[in-house]
Image 1 (tube, helix red, strand yellow):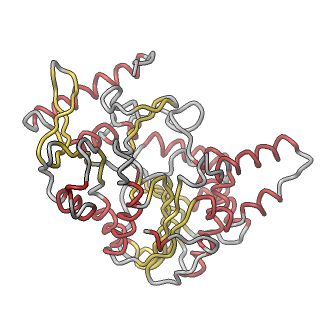
Image 2 (cartoon, rainbow, N blue to C red; image 1 turned 30 degrees about the horizontal axis):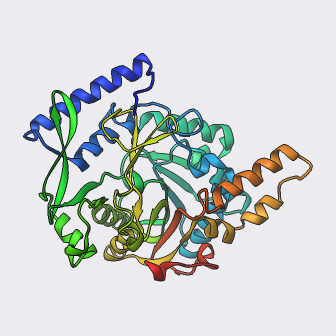
Length: 389
């Protein structure tokens, strides 16, 4: 990828990030595990992609999420959250990684209309810049509800009762990358060659990765030479941390990804890892560290299993399209005034973007986990796919 024109601030940030990464590589004997490289590039304090204050969401950012595409997404999700709060007797909602704050603002507005407002709406957000953006979005859309909102730097203490939601969070977790070469598994690390970041392939060395690969391929001989993909070893500890917090209630995760048999299909031989910068999509993780997003699709089978191992029960798994439709998408569109042609058209176009198979409808999935409450939820009524996990 040709490096685009950068501002002076972006150039300075890129230079500082490259110094940080070079120092980390040298401190790790010249070969840094890829997941650690990805973690630094995304989350290093002050420099990482999600913590450096650059604009990331919307037309002027690097990508568009569902809450940016249409307010209908957040309003439908609010219907599911209201039902969950009622079923578990919860008084709080926790959103992990609230992005621009649009989802929180629209959800609170819709929950108010449904007479289902939580006493507290908590946002776990590490970025001070994003906290500021979220506060501005809430102050603009629902200023009278700001007193219910609090920002956190870590998960709440054990005993939380309510609903935890996260949209496009799991795809941003650091992953390990691996490949099949000369009849053996290899793991990717990052090295330096003439001060340039480069791939360093070598034997598996991360604890747990061989076990996970064996679980996917009991007979590794069926894997084609050169097959390359990624695996998220952080799902289990993350889910355990959520489990320690959530005493009673629901965890709702929305993201793009596949069931495991689709994720590791022989034809998907280059994996799913991609990068975003100014709405360009590319695969090179070393071009603009700190400025580019890095992401991998979610293995929903592994995510669901991690939840089960952490003590949750499955409450549902379906496509985003069916989840939104079951939570009143058509009714919400019908509530818009047809005489306001521009606004009505925006609603319809937004709904198409959220639900069409060629857009977000099929590629994005919704997984719900539950503890200590009823497992039947409206969002999975018409098409529950948990049996395919």
